[in-house]
Length: 417
Image (cartoon, rainbow, N blue to C red; front, side):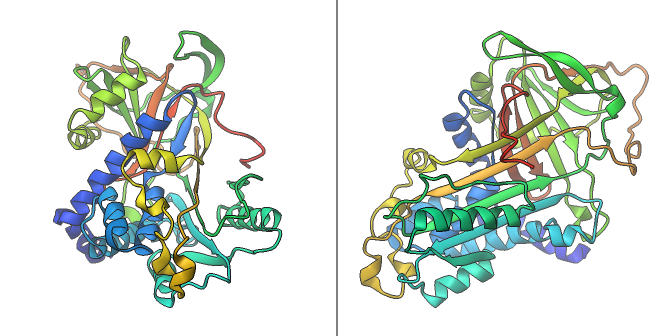
C-alpha cells in the first residue's frame, strides 16, 4: 500500500497538481472574502472543486477553458489527473471503507445530477459522471416538480449523509424553468489524536465582533503540548489539532483542524487580507513544525451548518459566467437543438462541521513530545472570532474553511441530527 501512496504523491511536482493546490487555497480565500460577513460559516473548497469539475466535463470551447482556468488547470487531461488524486484521497475515508478501519476519519462526499428524461444525456458524458465523479444521475420529473423533486433530492441527500444533512432544497429552489440540478454534499467526522477531557470543559465568555459578549460558552481545555505558532508580523496565531489516523492503508494521510486567531487589535477581515497578501503556502508549512507547552489554553465547542445558495453571483464576480449562459451545456445532450437553451440553473452546496471533546480510549497520551523545562509556555485562548480550516497535510487539500463569530449560533437542530 505504501507504494501506491508514493505513486500518487509523485504528482505533487507536476504542473496540474501545483495549480490545483493553488486553486484550493485561492478559492478558500475568495469565498471567505465574499461570504464571511455577519454569521458563522463553513464550506468545502474540495466539494466545490469537484462540482465545477463535473460542469467542466459537460462544456467545450471557451466555456470549458473559463472553468478550467477557474480550477487552476490547463486542459481536461489535468482535470482527469486531479480527480484521480482527489478520488484516491476520498476512497480511503468513505463510510464503507472507514467501517473496516474504525480509528480513522470518515469523509462522506456525494454528487448528484437531476435532468428530465426529455433531455437525454450523451452516453459519453453519463459515463464520465458515473466513472470519473461517482455521480448519481436521476430523473427530474416534469410533473409537479416543485414537490416531487424537492422530496426526492432531500431524501437522497439525507440518506447519503447518514441523516446529518437534511433539507438542502427549499420550496423556492425548483421552478418550472429548472432543467438541471447539480447537488453536492460533504460531511467530515474525525476523532482527535489527543481528545479533550470532558471533565475539564468549563464555561467562559466569548467576545463578539462588536465588543459585546455571550456568556457561559463551553470551552474545551487541555494541558497537552500543542502545535501553536505565532505570526505576530501578520497579526495572528495558529493552533493545529491532529485527527487520529486510521489503522489501515489510510495511515499515510494526516488531517488537521487549524484555527487562525487574530491578535488583539486585529479583526477577521484584516487577518484574512494579511494572509491573502502573503505566502499562504509558506504559512501553512510552518503550522505543525514543533509542539509547545501550553499556558492558558481553551477553545470553544461549536457546530455549524451552512448552505450556499447564491454562489452564481459570487462566481460571476470571479469571471466565471459562460457556464450560466444559454447553450453552455449543450454538449451533454444527445440532441443539439434541445441544448441550445440549457445552462447551469443553480448549485446547492451544504456543509456541516462539529467540534467537541470527542473522547476516545486509544492514543490520548501517545504523541507526547519532550519539552525542556526552560521552554516558555504559550497561551491560546480562542474567546473571540476566528477562522478555521480542516485540511489533509500530504495532499495539501483544504476540505473545509469557515469562521466562528458566535459559538452559540450556526446551526438549526431541525436540519442537523
